[in-house]
Length: 453
Image (cartoon, rainbow, N blue to C red; front, top):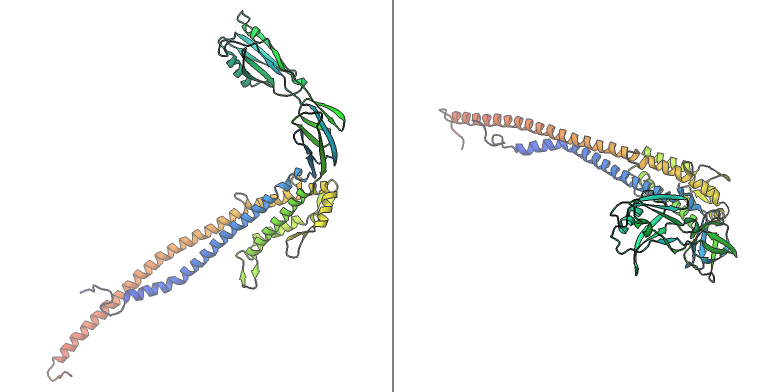
C-alpha cells in the first residue's frame, strides 16, 4: 500500500528538506541576478542624468551661437513717446538730438456714397495701382459694395490696398488705404463699366480723404525725409522708430557700449560647464571619505566626453582680427578641470576686442559654441551615443529576465526530482519498518522465548 502523506514512512520533513535544498541551489544565482539588475538600472538612471546635464549645458550655448548676442551697444531715449531706437555693432557711441515734425501717413481714398452697401453697383472691373504696380478686380452683376470690399482684400495679387466700408452721414462709402506710408505709395483707381451703364464708374469716382505724407524729422539739426516711420541709415548703426510728432519736443538718443549682457552670457556658459563637470565627476569619481566609487567610474564614454570637451575649450580660434582662445579673455581651466573667470581680463577684452570675441564664439560651424553644440548633439540626439548605451543596458536587463525564467523552470524540475527521490526513500523506510515489526512479533511467539518486560 502506498503512502498518502509525504514523510509518514520515515518521519522526516521531506517538504522542508526539499525546499531548503532548492533554496540553497537557487539563492546564489537569484542574488547575482538581483545585484546585476540593480547595477544596470542604476547605470540607466545615470545615463538619464548625464543626458539631462549635457542638454542643460547645450542650452547655455544657444545665445553664444548668435552673433547678435555680441552687439556691444545699447540705446537710451530721453522720451520714448516720440522716438524709440535700436543699435547694431556698427553704431558709434554718442548722443543725438531728434525732433519729429511730421509722421509718415498712408493715403486714403473714398468712393461715392451709396444708399445701401448691399445693393448692386454695376458690372465691370476695377484696377488699383500703387507705386507702379497694379491689380484688377472683376465686378460681376449683382455685386455690392460689400462684395467688392471682400474681393479687394482677398485678391492674391493685391499690391498694397486695404478696403473697408465707412457708414457716414451721406451713406456707406468704400474707403481704400495704402498699406504703406509715404507720398510714393499713393493709390490710383480706374473703373470700367461693361454692362452699358455708368454705375461702377460713377460709384468709383474717388475722393482723397487723407493725403499721403512723408515723415519729417531733424537729427542734430539736419532735416531728414522718410516715406516710413521706421527710419534706417540716417545714423550709422542706429534704427529709429517714430511714434508721435511735435517739432517743439526734443528726444535725445544716446548710444553707449554695453558689455554687461555679453559678460553675463559668458558667465552663464562657465557656470553651466562647471555644473556639467560636477555631475560627471560625481558619476565617475571616487570618494575617499566614503570609499565609494561613482556608478560610471572607468566608463570610456564619460572619459571621452570629458576629453573632447576639454580639447575644444583649449583650442585656438581664427577670427578676422587674428587667432584667440578662451584664456586670452580671462576664461581659464583649473587643475580640477573646471573653468574660472578673471573678471578684470574679461572686462578689458569685452571693451577692446568684442568683434574678436564674437567671432570666437559665434562663427558658424567653426566657432567655440557651434563646436561644443555639435559635440554634445552626438551624445544627446535621438539615436545618439547615450540612447545606444541605454539600449545595450536594457538588452542586458532583458537577458537577466530570461535567465530568471530559465532558472525558475530548472528549479521546478529539480524540486520535482528531489520529491520523487525522497518519496521513494520514504516508501522503502516504511516497508522496512513494517517488516521489522512483523519479524519482532514472530520471534516473540516462538516457544521458549520469553519476552522482556
